[in-house]
Image (cartoon, rainbow, N blue to C red):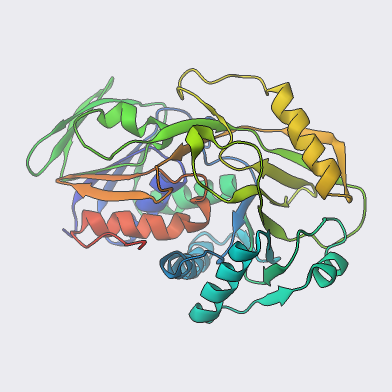
Length: 363
């Protein structure tokens, strides 16, 4: 549907990426955001998110490879550097690292399989858990700068960005959707709902996207005590209990920040929250647990220097993404704590659905 009138609800990373893609394709786009531009209440703020190609299954590796191309396209469009490829390291449970190596090999992605001693010598700031896999195309992306770049480019192409204008409800017709806000109502050919942890609240029972769980995660940034190379990392190991008994072998993740710190977080261990009633303060018990982990596994970091941040995960039972068309309503959600590396590719996928093209498959 070239030249369609499209509403994008939610101006976090996925909504901004969708607007970037839609405006490039000639669509008339209005972006609704309930908070201010670049707010920190959801999942798209901060300066450091892991980028990696390493996944245990081929479809995810391919999706990441496609995302890498689009990251470079976005950087060219915006004239801003967003992705820093300082490398990524996977270590821990042998079956996990072997699977990572196998899928990277099958996809033709350059990587090294390192013994524990070799990896320890290369990265002395970290304690390495068994065999490790390093791929130099991994690294990190700046989340806030990414959202700003996407919105700026979309606006330069004609997108109408409306901050502090929450969508109150939708009226879904057979081939259009009416968007209702406090400022009035408007009809659109298609609506893309990328409202993050608010997706279920907005669409309610109108669109069945299955179940999701919203959790508040609590990573922290620590200051290095040695001059060393630092990769992004994923540690596969038994760890703190997962929320809702989710099966996920990732214990912790982390990466260098542009400001010179090193961000580390537990994965999928946050408390279940209502996104409108989340705690304002950090949980000291969870912080102490993370500091103990740093003391054990990161000899090159000062565990007492923790600067805590919070973000929301919206997780599906399988941790697969929701990228679906339900008539004129397109839904992007459930990015399950591993979505940011795919931001420009998800934007392209959601724009494809607006145009009647198929959704990506992860299996």
